[in-house]
Image (cartoon, rainbow, N blue to C red):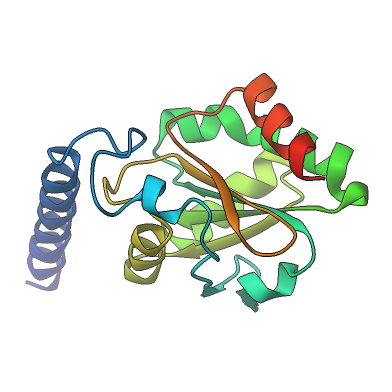
Length: 181
């Protein structure tokens, strides 16, 4: 009986998540700025902040990165493009952390699964994990489509300067970061 109840709630949760994603996706291109809210509305504005749980159990806030260029990347272990871009993000972290780049990966996932995945890849940047709190944070950071991966770049003054829904390409990302370092 307990297994059936858990299965019911799991299916209901997936259906609700799919409904939110579909409803948000139908609003239009989240990178295009057609909507009154979303990535385009966030550009030039102070970042909305966050405080979330890290894969290692500690709490991390956006303010922990004050004074740095901050790259926030929303991802999940089940997201193929997310998995593809993470090694590149880790390379950029290794190359540019000394110049003031902070990277935070925020996983919409199970804590243990995200921790194991990040460890298997050798990810050295901060990894935060959650469910509803991560969804709310992602939307507050402009991801009205609710899709992954989603990346936001914040300057040293805490102002959002660039967003990208979908897998980021190294060349484009490096150009955006270098303009802020």
